[in-house]
Image (cartoon, rainbow, N blue to C red; front, side, top):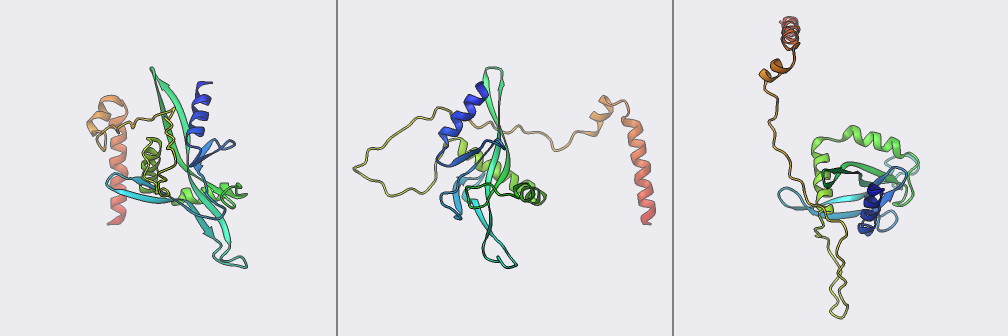
Length: 204
């Protein structure tokens, strides 16, 4: 019950920029108009940058060359979890595919599988930084000119997210640590050495 309440509250709070796919349980960047791309400005690790969070892709060949094939939306799967007295949100970056920016694409699963095969650590890290920036509540988006005679409406967010700093760890576990915890470590090392010698022998 609490998790669903948090999810609905977040959906309402970010409804101007994010939509929620009830079937896939994903939040994704909304299209502002049909068949139109959308950019989002955020701060990366080093500088202010932007990303095309709704990207338009056309057919590249055939009779429909030049026509819109699909739109790709940056998205994430949310997971609320309670640790002690605190609530945390973990996100898994992914993508949503639509026909025109609003209707789900009929081949969305195939398009997602193809995109995942091309993903690298750098692109996933970039998505994580972008969504972390969005959820933390900082706004760098270009706005229309300020109207002096229009009353500004300030709404305090119901949910606020604090960034959890990454835990620094060594790149690899020291080799001697394995032998202290794994009783089969010595036998496995001998097998590895023998297999390595065999491979090197073939190359001579």
